[in-house]
Image 1: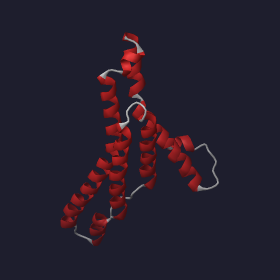
Image 2 (image 1 turned 30 degrees about the horizontal axis):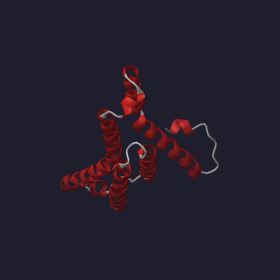
Image 3 (image 1 turned 120 degrees about the vertical axis):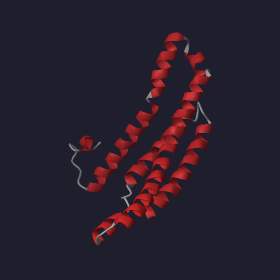
Image 4 (image 1 turned 30 degrees about the vertical axis):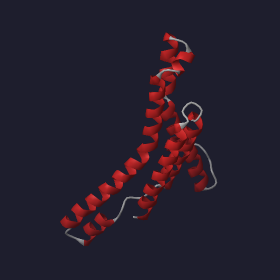
Length: 157
């Protein structure tokens, strides 16, 4: 995504990060929503649009799309935390020098931009699909709560 911002001339680095955050959020949202038009065009060719919206396959697709997009970030962050503790435990035992021990103890850097863009995408998904799938609001709320605690713990260690 950096090549999209490389031609822009911003006065401050924070302005560049802000535009990158908006572009990243839009790209994640479009990647999440992209299976929906493909499904709709395939169903519209075979039947009417009203019948396509009333099928269980459509709501199953919405549920799967919302749940996977909401739960992907907290699960990946939690696995990253667990992986760091396992890696630290293994590398601490094998450390021969002080530099090896310090490199084993340093946690990975937490990127606030990725976390914020994921939260913006969650809200965009909730607003987009709440009319068709009202449970999406509660799923997004649960995802935001879980993501808050995972990000809070990931930024502290």
